[in-house]
Structure formats: C-alpha cells, structure tokens
Image (cartoon, rainbow, N blue to C red; front, top):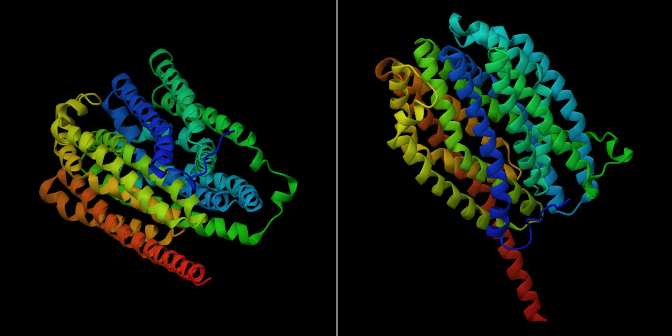
Length: 456
C-alpha cells in the first residue's frame, strides 16, 4: 500500500498529487449530499427539503465533534510518521481505535436521547418536526459508521494516502444515490429513505478504508501495541478535544442562526437550507486544500522541516484563491439559477438570492481560514484554533441577533462573513506565532553549524 512522505521532494508536486484525489473525494461527498437534497426536494417537496436541511446544524454539532477528534488524532499519527518513529505511530493508532469505540457509543447515545429537545431548542416548525425526527433518529442511530469513516480516512491522510478515501466515496456515492432514488421514488419511504441510504453508504466507505489500513505493513498492529499507556491517551485527547470543540462551537453558532431563521417561518428555513448546501459545496476546494495543508504540515513539523511548511502554505493558498475566483463569482452573478435547482417556491428563491451574492463576494475569508487554521493545527497547536471557533460563534450570534430584525434574511449572510473574518485574523496570528520562531531557531542553528565547519 503506497504512502507519501511529504518531508522530501517538491512541496508543490506532493501537495497537488495528494490534493486531486482529496478534492475529488470531497466534491463527490458534497455532490452526493447535494443530489440527495435535490432528490428529497423534488421527490418529497420543499417541506421535506427544509426538514432535512434543518437537521444539518445538529448533525454538524455531533459529526463535526467526531471529525475534529479524528483530525486531531491524525495530526499526531502524521507527526510520528514524519519523524519515522513507527513504534510510536502504531501505539498511537492502537489507542485511537480504542478511543473511537468509546466515543461512538457516547455520541450515539447522547444524540438519539436528546434529539427531540434539540429540535425544539432551535424552534423547529411543527410542520417539519415529524420528518426531522424520522430522519434524525436513523442518521444518529447509525452515527458509528460516520465516526469510523472519519477516523480511518484521517489516518490514511496522515500517511499521505488520499486515493483510498476517493475510491471509498466513489463506490459509496453510487450506492447512496441509487438507494436514495429507489427508496424515495419506488418504495415511497419519505425522508427516512434518504437517511437509510446515507447510513448504508457510510458503512461501505468505512469498510473500504479500514481494509486498506489493514494492508499497510508498517502499521500492522500487534497485541503489544494495545498495551494501555496513559500518556498516549492523554496526548491524543489533548490534541483531539480542542479540534472537536472548535467544530462543535462553530456548530452551536450555526444552530443559533438556525434558531433565528426558523423563527421567521418555513420559507426562511427552506431558503437557508438551500443556501447552506451551496455554501458547503463552494467552500469545498479550499476546505480540501486545508486538509492537504494539515497532512503536509504535520509530517514536516514532525520532521522539523519548517521551511517546507512555509512553501506548502503558498501552494494551498494559491488553490484557495483560484477556487474563490471561480465559485465566488457563480454565487455573486447567478444566484437564482443556482437556487432553482433545489427549490420551487418563489419566496424562498427570492430570499436565497439575497444571501448568496453577499457570501460569494466574501467567501475568500473562509477559503483562507481553512488553509491557515489547518496549518496551525498541523503544527500541534489546537488551542488557538479552538478559541478562534469561540470568536467565530460570538461574532455569528452577535451579527444575526442585532441585524435580523432590521435587514431580514441578509443578516444570516453578514453573520457568516463576520465570523469568517474574525476567525481568520486570529489564525493568521497563531500561524505566525508558531512558525516564525521555529524558522529563526533553525536558521540560527544552521549559522552556528556553518561557523563551526568554517573554523575547522
């Protein structure tokens, strides 16, 4: 099984070779989520689409937490791989597996038990409540599949393998869309059909990733690797929890936005569901560049190749700017054409056309945020990115609570822009605070060594 050592060779060549399978994987995920929503909207109506969309903030709260943990664990695995410490790598992987089982049980129990209360907390309209519960119980009941995929895919990325997750998503996407269409249009199951299709596809993608991990000789685990070492568990939790909390804090901010949106009726909820899908889709290239930055930075930080981190940053930011020019323009120039693909009602379309151009012009802020924040996390500092998540939440809540009654649906878009900008500024500071001293330290060591050689 091929893995990639990011500590040697051309940074641009390595990142682009890693990025293309990664972006195809990520885009396929977004596309099949998008088509999933389109099938629900066209097959079951705008209210069903609003119900599924209403669940997205709650789903991100739980799954985003597990995704953050997985990425935090992956950073430490990449550090070990970059340092060529295979014993430490295997031990960290064994502890990751044990933690994943515990986390899956806790999160599944918690999310299923509190789903009705959470839906009421965000003021879910009674017209949508029944569908939200049907969809939510199945999605959260099968949460283990999503968590296991996140952890296995993060481990593969840490080892420089972005091809296996691509293969997993290609296969699972085909299963998801086929099963989705069959259950909704043929069996007429309603929104629960979309949920079942999602869980089945996630199980398949997990099996593919885990099978590949078992084929890598250097991480083939032995009984000795599972010997409990408190320090390894502490390191994994210390690195994973802040990244998990960052995602959950961001999700709480989004839930508060959903609370204000839902308070204005089903048309607002429907418009926001469609806009959120486009925003997630068009953020994807930069978000994926962030994943590439994380893997590249983690390995090179473990190997103390700090100059290469700086070079990797330039490559990933270039990808983000290219994505902004293309996709930001689409949101700004053709919002109605985009929105009518998903929804039918004239009022939700009108509202969505207020939101998309604002975010289209400003999406460069979050595009850069993904890359720089991933670099900070890859250098082993998950705490400042977590605090940037707190700032993001505060700015998002403050903006929508102040502006919603004055400018209506546009307030949701402005809240996003404020949150992105604040978090970006904090992460730029964090990135410079970590990397600049490391570069100076390495340069000083190089100068001392050169002087010693010259004196000899």
